Image (cartoon, rainbow, N blue to C red):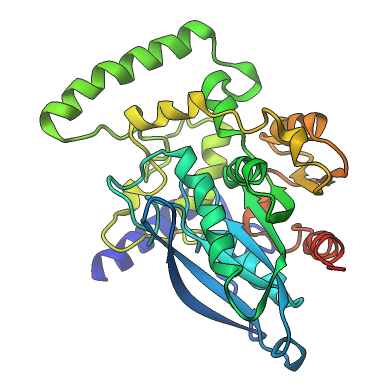
Length: 345
């Protein structure tokens, strides 16, 4: 704990030294007085334990009858305490049972090695969450939806293509983790660069097989480099400052977010938007900031999806703004969407 306190203090001073300030409305660690939060766990089809925070409304009308439920997935490389638990509480305040999950290999969920990239298992976690919620006596199993933030938007879509029990699908600041790994933002990665990365990862597997030690890609260093690009700065201001730091037990700040090269390349074979139109007639809502560097992915998914669908742009918002800035996040839009789509018969 002493080490963590010192680390947080150093990070805060670094944040101040770079001339940054806490954004208006940032409230990642929001705690509602109108909900209860319970730690729960359940098995996926790989017999791995998935851990989540089950959030339930506490007002009297919510204590009887079966309620609609929404599963909330965290940003890629994050944990449930980063962004997804904020959304889970805000939705629960409006009468939904919500479940913010840690994806396998992340947070409190099972899986070794830690921080492993395994998109099929990520998608399976959402179906396992449906298994869990649909067997609770306080949940109406015919009214379960899903909300995926950042990378979890693509995992939720992947899950929904296979699992019709997910009746309504919403994404916020979505990243297509397959496309961004293959092509980069704005198609900035060439085919040769992609092949070179695959060759490097394949060669690295020999070293991992021999030594058992993986090489982590330092996407997000603890100290922000002076020449950091704008996207790195945006993520750093959340994940490496008191605004959003959350370190799972047994991990260090340095090892949060970052992944191994040899598993990162698995995303190159991940195509969540292929056959997205088959989700229809279940409704899809894509929410993104109109200034977000990731906007292209919500636009692509919207163009390919069947009806009913909606692309909702938040004026003036960037990608990370919609992680925690309660002054910008359109909670009313999400509440209206899930209220209408999970209304039942």
